[in-house]
Length: 151
Image (cartoon, rainbow, N blue to C red; front, side, top):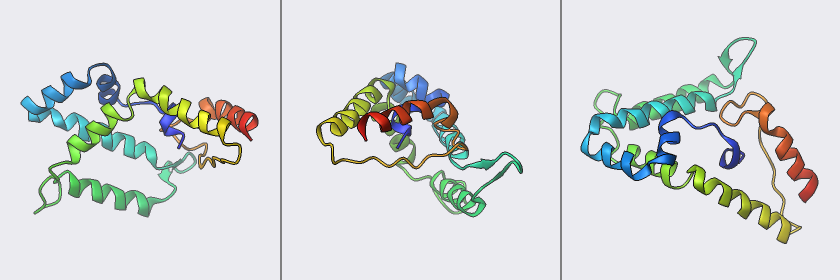
């Protein structure tokens, strides 16, 4: 997944890279601030669905609508549904402690190390020029360089 290496992070996630434990503490003592995690998660989700530049509509509108409904339920925005108790901590934990900028270089080294030490290993990229989470145009050259070097 190219997102492990190159993606543009929303504000809260970028802040979490700099001050992960401080933000975690603030989210615990000021629960209202948790809306920042939800907002950034939903913004990233909007970017995750390809938008046709000619129509400005989602390429897969049914899938996008279905995911938006799942998000609404998890965040307690559906009448009769409570917010999932672990959704915000889970999103924040993954963002701050697994996909942090400090760790991405290590993830990249592991992948490239595996490709170097295991010549039979293959990586297949599923990625397109409508991807806004990991901008295709800005990053495809690096991925193509990996393909030439490790293929």
